[in-house]
Length: 178
Image (cartoon, rainbow, N blue to C red):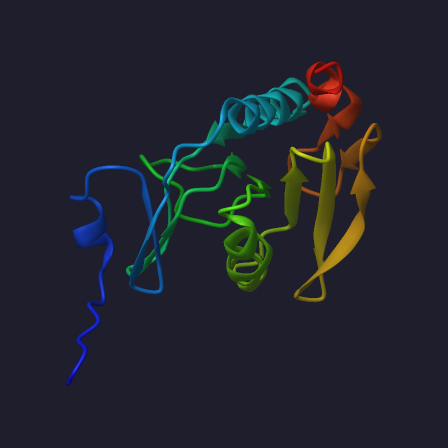
């Protein structure tokens, strides 16, 4: 018996209904939809990044397609992008944040980690809503180097073209009272 595995491209992807990512030609369903806490934490991080941006060339976007290759399209939870002119992300964001859920952990911690590292994303932040904790990584010598874990601390990012910061005490404040 011969098993045929389809290899999809962006042309296929853009016609699909629902919420998908495309990783090296393989479709990945983004289902079920993220829970309220996931979405709210992503919003709080986006708000922190945006309110602290120190330039006008950059912006924060939520769940926007990043067309990396013809067969790889990812949808980071939060991205800080600079000097993008089109409808989608076409070059490495300065900061990517993924809010990790049980169903996305392996993809966020391994697959996307490797892709973002390969694509030279300067900062990658993994956020764990169930633990109210974030792990921040900085690209150094072509590899992600862990900066630290954050619960209530401030992550200052001042070595990119658009400095900003994230105060994790503000991000997690509402969720500590639950």
